Image (tube, rainbow, N blue to C red; front, top):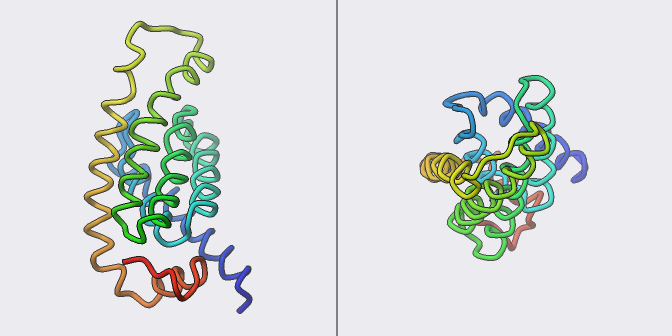
Length: 173
């Protein structure tokens, strides 16, 4: 099968997983399963495809589930930095740190002005509004992703995904 077709197929699979799993354990402002998928996508697919995945999932969740723009502000930066972290460190730990910084900090801080535009309401709790929930979700997601990764990295499908997206020489530990 053509490499581009395989990449698109794996991307579609990750989008489907994220859309189906993200409502699990979801509390408003906290989507730990989305962090799990972002971290795994960062390791398996790298920054470009992980970001495309998170953007598509955010749009789908907003349209189909009525989730506010937090679905985009949180997930996209986390997926991008998870992919970059995995590439730089060649480990899931780089992906975890990228997700925590991208979603837990950057995404949470950018969510406030986006939600002010979306709802028209302002509050004086700028720094405290989304950051604790986003960080909580990313830490829960990071632990779950690490536990899943310990077994998933042995599965041939995941090894193939890493080869397709990263090449033979860039297999992640």
